Length: 328
Image (cartoon, rainbow, N blue to C red; front, side):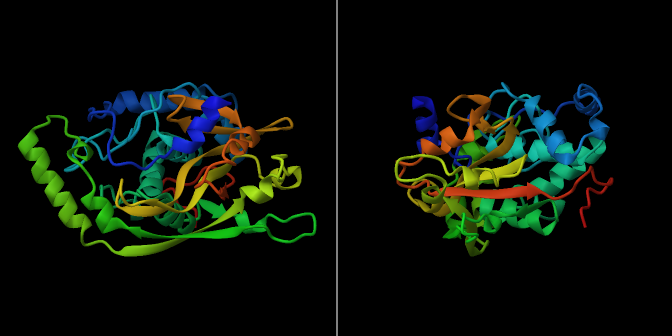
């Protein structure tokens, strides 16, 4: 349990620096073959519903290493030349996004389209367009596209009363960009002078972005557990299989570290295994993709001064989408 506690206190997907240098994109044929192989290793995948697709696809990555900032915009990018696609390691956001893209697609070309639409505003690849902020960018853009739906407000207590609360934060993107360091510029042929030039340009572009208010619904830990830490099974049983779970820290003050407040620090999938609800996530603490009991995971967060609850979303499409990855 000590490792779980440490994870809950320290885990965050959004940071200023990365632990890896840029790597070249996999050759197209090699990437396509790896995707085809992944689909073919799951028996009768075409017959599975979306929940089962998400479960089977994500389970194939359990044990893969945690790599912070595992994806970038590819070798032709100006700011971040980390590969656009990979399956050898993930952070919490790239894990959820990559698995969801695979589940919404049937082949390599469809996967690439889905990943771009999930990860970038309007599907336009670029550092500025990337969904850096979970609640403000990732949730909003992917809800609007019909990929996911927030169902947090649907949860009710035994009196059929809603239990959700709303977290609010002012996300200062210009300030966040000013806090970026040279480690955010990942080039396949690093050059200190060129890196600083590109960092300066990135900060300049970021300074023109809007400061925005973000809101996100959450189920309070005080509703999910009683005063003695006993889980409220009535609420937990309302979490659907293959739901996306986001850890909510209302108005989390990270201004000293990254220049802004946030509401979400981590995300993963929830799957029912018999009577147990597991949380499948790319974990910085464990250093890999792991399954942990969600109730235990959240119980360890009860003493946290910042973690206050979870947001719950479902994947809307019931089957893979078309070649344009269009859900509407």
